[in-house]
Image (cartoon, rainbow, N blue to C red; front, side, top):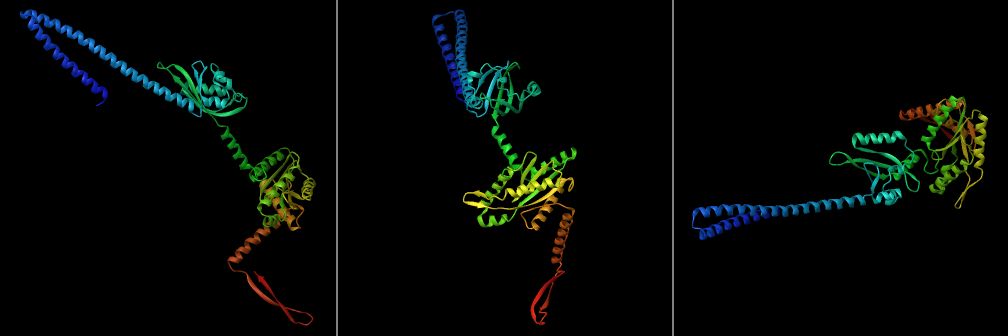
Length: 420
């Protein structure tokens, strides 16, 4: 049984005992003083009224004391809840801003001051448009207040301005607070600084489209830019050139000096190439030691060949880093739009065929794409496929034939032949 119920039981028992004692005492006293029955009855009635008045007074005093007790308890509980709410309000890492129904700031927390750079006295009595960044138009704020009016809440990304003038992104939630009569009394805005999240998103987007070693566009971004360049060239009746570049014998450097030296060499090559190209030229690393150059507004083979020669000449000087001075050559394949290809994929494939031709010709040079290269490339693919099938079906046979010296007809060796 709760303590307040036990107290009530004790009070009730005490009242009962006092009532019995009072009635017995008054009855005894009246019997002693009055002999007439009528007098005793009259005084008993007077005594009853007196006891009722006394009881009413006692009950009133007891009720008042109990009410004060509970009121004190309720007020204490309210004060505890207010202290807890104030502690949460002040210790949360999200910024909190409270305005009255007229939109004047009446309270902010410590996180608000840390995020915005304003101190409390600088913003109290001001309106939240003090923090406007200028990035959002009237429609943005109109939609915000429409949501507050219809739903009592708004959440979204908003750009605001710190005291320093820096514009930064927030994720903000605004709620409408109403009084007991349903009228708006306050607005509460809770927000967090999402600058770090935005920076991470930008970094991830950058890494998705750039080579992490050299910082150059990767294959994905290069393909996208090639598509855009070809669409623009087709619209304006211009030409483009794609140069595919491969470093000669780069694997030997990796195997002999290690991958760290190889990485430094790739970064040095990328830096040297950056200084060669004017605006309108995209340089990319497609992977490994393979680079690509997209030249817009280039329709003549002579222009592309001159650029290829400049690239090769740029590699004549050694690349120096740490204790190493390395020489590296390159082979370049060139394909032109619209003469050689009409799509980005075809342009890249044709440049690859030209690159193979340059390597086959002895490396450290360049080659232009021709239709013959496509035919040769297709023939190589078909022969490779047929040879794999021949191996699987055991269609290859080894034959030996003697080798004789013509002058003496003497047997001097044996020649082994594989026949299909």
